Length: 292
Image: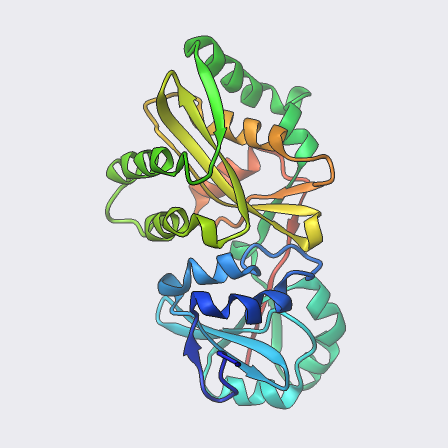
């Protein structure tokens, strides 16, 4: 039974749609962080995601800052479909380089404008760089890791699974209590990710000092196993260096078959952009948008 309606009908994303949606996403080559079932489902409320299908193509609609947009994660999309969508939406978002390479000529020939969406570029790091922090460029990061180990003698790690989930929840609540309430955060999505941990193929770690949980991370394999996208990373700010340590420890825990770690976008936040750049990205997963 198809749970995703046919265009022009849309339906909210539900857990039951995982088997229908995942095949459209799992083999995509670019490693776009949003293009996984967890990436769409967990942020469905934040962006009001709905889905439909037309001629076998998955179409996702959303709203950001009052503007309605659509996404076509996979496969070529006929220009007539695009014309129909632009009757209801102001922007076509999250267009990957692989998709654009095959479709740019027809998009521009139809009179649409293609632009890079820098605020949504995903930051890519070599797993080996984050796992070793070797070299002058990572000297400060390695100092944070060393200082954490020197300050807190009894440091340990556990896989983030059902047995350690409550510990991760405790860190999340501490983190949320110390965030500026005037800013929109991913607290609700992170909380639901932990609540539904056994529903997604995600992997993660919980960091402890003595018996106190102080940080956790949760990620998902994309791009057919070549890239791991970190969806959530939370730490207690009263344990100095906890963020740097969980980042380092998680990279070390990944198999060598993983080439890159995708630490997602900065959404145009200058502070976040500077922080992501200090880890010396090896490149970006570029994303493009199209307007009328």
